[in-house]
Image 1 (cartoon, one colour):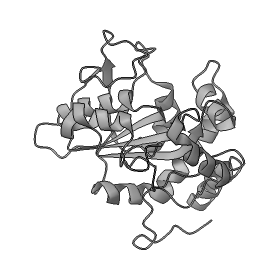
Image 2 (tube, rainbow, N blue to C red; image 1 turned 180 degrees about the vertical axis):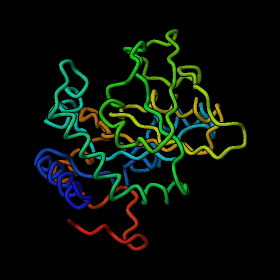
Image 3 (tube, one colour; image 1 turned 45 degrees about the vertical axis):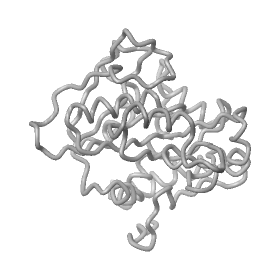
Image 4 (cartoon, one colour; image 1 turned 90 degrees about the vertical axis):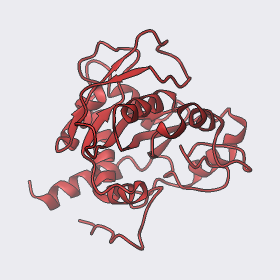
Length: 263
């Protein structure tokens, strides 16, 4: 299959999801500058991100990039995020999530690298499951691994002394495998499916920073929004009305980076 045909196929598989994908994360008043969740209009960060920043210091992720929003636990996108890791594997869910990720990378990874001041990513890491720490390969890695095969992989092991359902940041939740020799430039793309409080993802980012990573950029398929949280109402209303924008992102640099040609 030619490059043009592959791009067309990926775009088509994202387009069929537009009916249920929620609006793209964008900066604004009442939106956390770290995770793009809801926060007080007078604040720059939500409470979880402010707490994690205090606990982790400068060792949290350098940038958090949600591809889309997930409103509560309902809807087809939420179902895809649940079904892709169930047995037997749901091929449609995996295909949809893979297309969403691949299209975002094709069109917006330059935006992400510019925002993070990264020339190129050297490594990729998938946030491990804390519910099933014995898994050899996380289902997200099985799903997206082929799309990031050019990057060297880093595996994290799970400290099972930390409660698997914890919503708090833990400096010792994960342990990194072998990283390059000290002094090497290691810029890691850290991947997860859903961001709720960010505690698990930021614990993984902290682990990578402690192990010697220069930059850690967190890319998640969906930023989950809790409609019951008091400050979420304006954001929920916005993402309910505004369709997902395939050709933009939270860090889109349309004036600096030529937009890819539509196939």
